[in-house]
Image (tube, rainbow, N blue to C red; front, top):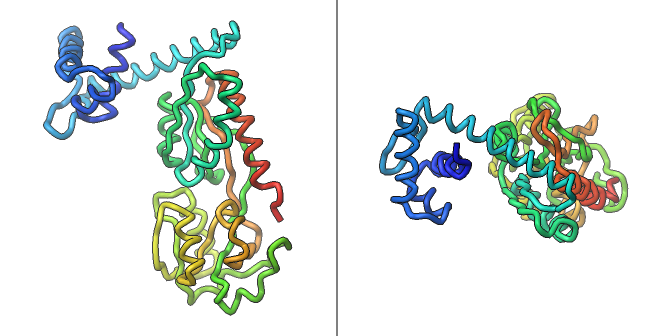
Length: 307
């Protein structure tokens, strides 16, 4: 079995289009098509249903793709382990970040990581928590950094980095803002029920934050008036600064805005976890371990003055 051929088939499946796959692989479309036809002739069956806009796997294609991922993962693990033994500091590392936090993490970590591993092929991916979980489980992603609750964890391995509190954030023009403690002091506590008549900007339903936030409204006994739904917590902060609504946001997105918005703790201090994750029963390379250590360092710096 040709490992390059495995990569070709996986790229066609990833792109759902042979022309786009050929562009990503830097080969011509006829050459890639010939590789696929040769393989299908060898197997005696088609691997993809063809159409102009959407190539999707046949039943045989699904089996081939699943096992191709396992084979390539075994190759990466073997090469990484040999690299650690020989201390060559070479290899491949794919890392997932959530879109709202990824840029800041990567900007801090990459220069430090590159000093230790200049020859590692590092592939950062800016993707949602749920997609990271699927990609880790399938072997497409080596490690991922995400925020979630215990209930949202899958059978993958999760390494806790730090907890993060959810805060009530309201405009400074709201009459309740006078109840907030001054910036630099511990947060005062506010019952969510006191905001039942206020509009809210909330994370969209597909986000991992939605389940936690929805449970807080359910516990408070009311359905929020939703002014706006978004995939980005910074959008919620912007709308609160503009005196349009209130929001429930993780500490990270409020910490630089305490002069502009009033923030409160919720009763019971609900929180979720910032974690690193990798596939269960897989060995982390020394490079992956360093990347996780640097993530600990980054978040310890970010939350150094948590009140």
